[in-house]
Image (cartoon, rainbow, N blue to C red; front, side, top):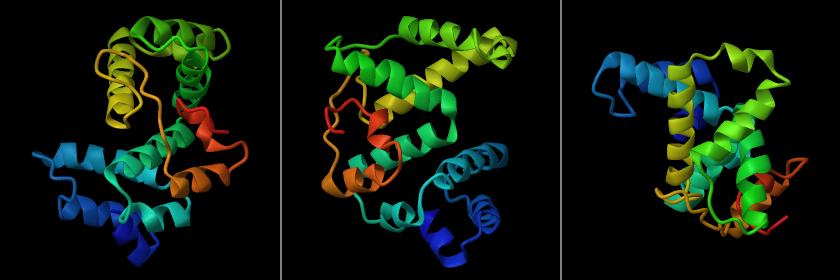
Length: 175
């Protein structure tokens, strides 16, 4: 989808094209629409330079950029990455669990009433998806062990351009 954006510089056109051509290879139209919408939401959080290199990076680098995009797009994910995942890594805890997420979420709900309005089923699905995203980005094993991230020089440089640095979303000692 990034090359389509580079050609048109219009996320609406990218979304329409991706759904029409089933770029994300969804089995059903509704799944395709949902996946494309989410991909566009995340991709639109990346800078033009990050989008330009997305097609030429390794799978690991792509995972790191897309994780940063999710953290930028969704404050709760970004805060969890920084305040729980990275913190547990830096303090040598080595693992992160659903229970850690539950504690984090309860603490945030004290300050954000809208979090209390989330149904139990939605809450569990969001938690499950978040952990799946961390595994896919190479930040976590399926057993919940935190994987130290070694960011490539080009990805680290791009993430460092932001203030504060988006390296804060990763289990790494860089900063």
